[in-house]
Image (cartoon, rainbow over all chains, first blue to last red):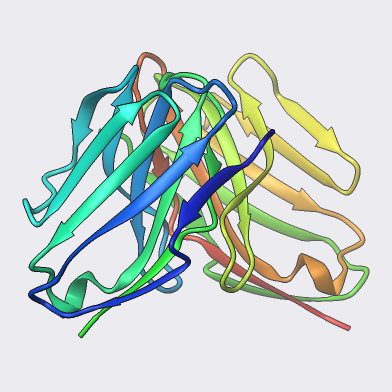
Length: 113
Length: 112
């Protein structure tokens, strides 16, 4: 299995809602990532987990809360988002964090109303 | 930190022609350079990569070259086809680092 999966594909939420994005990989990778991507822009790194420990938090607002329950799963909990948070949220995984190929999931298209 | 610049931002070529996209990086400690293709509404897909101990790598119609002295690397696509139309991102990863630094992307259009 060489795929990273993400659910849901699309999500519409109000500014007072709480929702979660999920990511799963079964490639035995020990590093997982959350990215935010706006249209026609490169992916913007949010969080990096290495061996299930948070290793990078790129100054992301606290309304985004990551969680790595085990080596195959990665969640992103969302609360009190703003309209400008609407974007494609991509999960990726790699064998390790240092100079290894990253494989992306299909993303969750998030719209905040 | 690392800074990756990518040119051109848009590129149109006739089907069958070649396309070249160039990236420069700033940190000489960068040692891994992947290229991603992203079609509209799809995920970024790794299409080719190169490590700093290699000067060139080829996979069918796609090749990547690396000039460590000048700190630049390029993607070459030969015999372009309409399905090559997409946004292409280069990236660099620093030795002992744990993240990619992406270029700003090139929107490639192949005209049939």
